Length: 238
Ligand SMILES: Nc1ncnc2c1ncn2[C@@H]1O[C@H](COP(=O)(O)OP(=O)(O)OP(=O)(O)O)[C@@H](O)[C@H]1O
Ligand SMILES: [Mg+2]
Image (cartoon, rainbow, N blue to C red; front, side, top):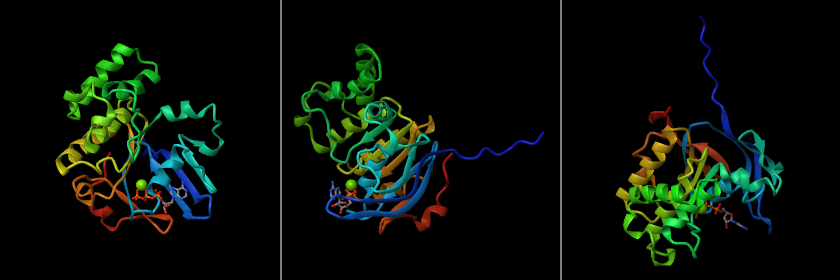
């Protein structure tokens, strides 16, 4: 019997994508790139290169000026505003500035993500507690976000993004406020999630942390993505 090699399936595909912000600032230009289902990719580039903008295009935080962005096989520009919340439920997003709900305590910030996807409150809180303990915030469950350090807020944001086990995780500088050990531990959490099927795209400046993980790195440079030279030296995952 002849067994056929399965083709990798794309979860995200950019085709000739350009992005110009109102006011005329061009950030992306003719960018084409695919991300396969189950992949783990580091996204790098100097400050202002457009990493956050690229992630925003995927969750339709902004719309491409030119070209097409396809996620889960769908042109994101064609998603209607009534379909957007459902679309975003399949995506975990760690925002660069955390964006916690200021009126909810740590536990409910994380549990809410599960409640929204239909889990009952008690189960949602139980799962949220476990995850928060794992990220080292077990002693802070009932505190309000404004009482937390930046690194603690970042860990709440990460717990909130991963608790639903999203198909696609977009993490924007998720370890920016963490020391190396805490950053490493959180990347291990992303790795665990990746192993059970989540595709991870992680924007970061943290080259020391990237060097510890065997995943490819693409760099935004002059509006396009380029593979970083040492990618081939790294062992590809999956
Ligand atoms: N809403 C906006 N309106 C106009 N210009 C914007 C907007 N958002 C971002 N920009 C500009 O687009 C460029 C890319 O910004 P972006 O935040 O995507 O970069 P980045 O690579 O994430 O940077 P950093 O590493 O500092 O987070 C910057 O020059 C920024 O000033
Ligand atoms: Mg950014």
